[in-house]
Image 1 (tube, rainbow, N blue to C red):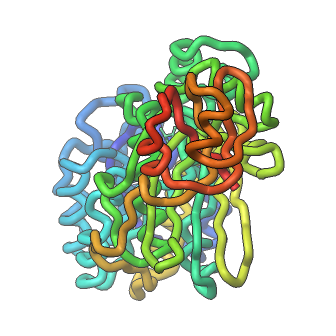
Image 2 (image 1 turned 180 degrees about the vertical axis):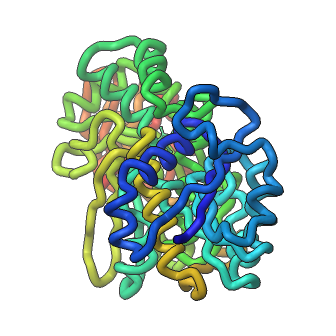
Length: 395
Ligand code: HSE
């Protein structure tokens, strides 16, 4: 029997407890022995919960119990969770987490601690919810030189955009629904302002390119600036407005990472990713292009990924799986404003004025123009054209 524990009995922690319990038989078979959920740590009481007997308010119960080999961290944030995870790794316990904030801000440091103590620190659930994404990127695609990872990385904003576009729902109503379904962050500003996607881009960048990219190195814009004019112009061009998180290798071997509302053409698979679903396109020099798709948020999908990590940890109790990256190197980063991309821009200027400054363009409704050739944001801003909106076009 292997004993495990969960930190945090919120949406994800509750889901992990459920999956471990409801799928106990199938898990035992896969692992070769029973996985016993010995503790759940939370500051609250849960009278009447089927897991009441597992609850403890004392982290030391878990830290000091030599029987507990694997711990799922589902508290979130990078304060108390970080302190607990550091202590657990240093005590020789394997940790699986869904905590993207902690991995995006302290992943390099935590992997170093895990390495020093020969334990695993896994975080599959931190990006893409239940989608198997990070392990395929790190392992199955290891033979590639990765050139780009681009995704719809936030289920809440994709849900809101889909509800607004397809059902004419109001922003606030759609957000409330996303919160009720357990998709949104505790403070949903992290979703709608792009910070959650930014953290996920940091993690994808590190796995794709081998060095830490911190949130402040990722140019980030959320969905609050999206207007009816964006939707009208995108629709006329057979595109959809989607919040994309992107990290890409430039021609000179540097990396550019950003989160921004994009126009996504109907020819792209990402165009068809709606609702709470996430879709992530990975481009590499051997695979060409692959897309991973699935539920990007929610209790059980996220728990599915956490439990998968716990199983992998049980399979590797005495062996650390190779997982590592260097610390950040600002010299290896390119400013988003200097990355040439296809753009759609909205302006009060005429087509002739746009073309005189920025080259050939196609007029769309609502004062939008689709530029024919890739160009940098800096060059567009320096053109002197009165800009109302600027959206990269995904290609
Ligand atoms: N708030 C996040 C989302 C949860 O909506 O994608 C999953 O990371």
